Length: 315
Image 1: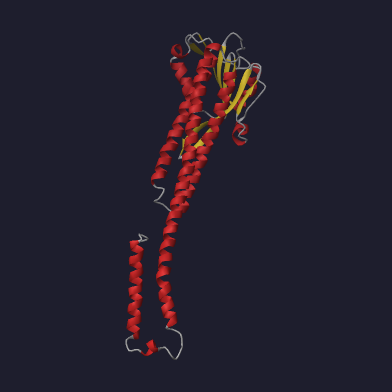
Image 2: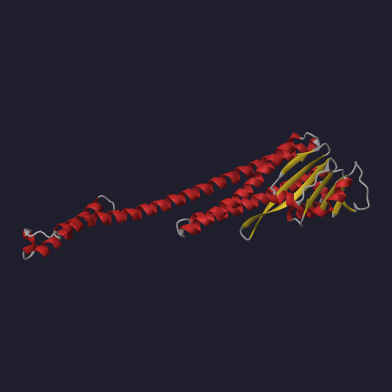
């Protein structure tokens, strides 16, 4: 557990295991989910989101209470080419911000370090430091999500370049994998948009009046990210359709070649069938140059058909 007292452009480390809570002061607390029972009792928080609840059940979103918001969300990150999400629970009250997770989180840690390094810049003149800390976390989440989207875009562009250069099974599998990754981020951003809309309603007046403009800005950013990932999702669908269309065209070209070969051999087979009949009265069978004549005719017929196909631009 790391707990801080914020306000008046400063941040001070405190020990909540021994200190009591004062309603006139603002608190920023980072805990492991196993420590929630202690902190929840101090701040009168009844709801607990644990990592198993958030990650496995995918029950993300926001719940509104009289004296706080309970928010469950996932922070996306690309690890070894795959989108991984880290569950985080955030509890926001008028004078406190509590962040709970089952492991150390880079995003929260970066906000913590930033505020500790320059509190006079980030917290000065703010009537509700808890709101400002919450805003900073959401703002860094926007940057984090944008970085994930840009990385997905880069990878999808690389897929577009090789869409016609690899085997069908490999290409389809890669496109399906990319689609799943984008869908995971898209779902995450849909929840963020919903969360920001609820915060702007401010039914329990947890967000102070001077901070509403900040959260309105976050709402706009979330909406833009949601639009970007939706376009990316549609682009993958279009890319897959283009690949399948090209595969179909290649198959059509192959069938076209086979059809032309069959068309050329059809009259040749007919001629061979006619002269293969065992009738006694077939004068051509006893003609001295009959074999050479028929073979020459068959060759000319084949060449003529090839020229005809060429003239029609079928080959």
